Image 1 (cartoon, rainbow, N blue to C red):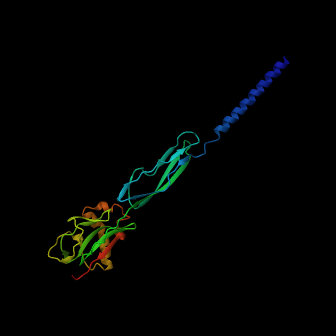
Image 2: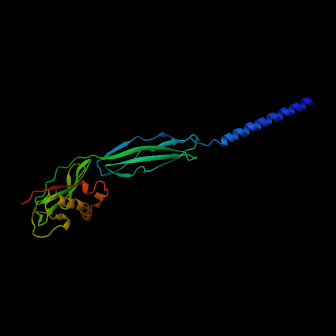
Image 3: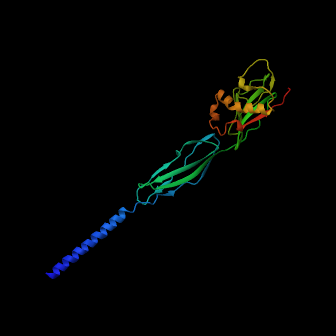
Length: 247
C-alpha cells in the first residue's frame, strides 16, 4: 500500500513536471516572434539596353525571394516589367519581399537605356536665316528646323522639320528633301510666323528667344511627341546655327 502511494506521488510529480515543461515551451514559442526577413535568392544585376529607336520595351528576369516560414513571401516592384522606356534614361528598380510578419527584404538594380547613334551629316545653314537643332548628351542633332530673318523668305519650300534617322540619314516632313534652302528677299508670306525671327541670329538675346520658342514651334506643327521628354527637349538642348547674312 505504501509503495502504491509512493508510485502515485511520483507519477503525479512527473506529470506536473512534464506539464510545466510543456507550458514553458509553449510560452517560449508564443513569445518568440518571427523577426527574420525574407531573402532574395535571385536579384538582377544592373542592366544596359542599347537601341536604335527613341524608345524600347525593357524586360528583365523577375527577382525570386524565399522565407524561413516556408511560405512564399509577397514580392512587389516599383516598375512594370516590359514597360516602354525612352532612350537616354536610367531608372532605379526596387523590389520588396514581405512575409506574414511584415518583415521586409529589398532587391535593387538599375536599368539604363542608351540609344545607338549613327550621326547625320551637318545640314547647311540658310543664308539670312538660322538652323535650330535639338541635341543631346549621347547624340548629335536629333531634329532641326530652318528659319528666316524677318524681311526674308525661303528660296524654295523647306521641310517643316528635318529628322535624323537611326541610320544617320536626314529625312524631311514637307517636301521630303535633305536640302535646306537659303533665305532671300521676301516677296510675300509663306510659312507660319514661327519660321521667322527679328534681329541678328548671332545676337545672344535673339538666340535665347529662338530657343525658348523652339518647343512651342515643334508642337505647333504636330510633332509634340518629339518633346515628351522635357529633359531632352528644352531651351538648354537647342543649338542655333546662324547662316551668313547679306546675300
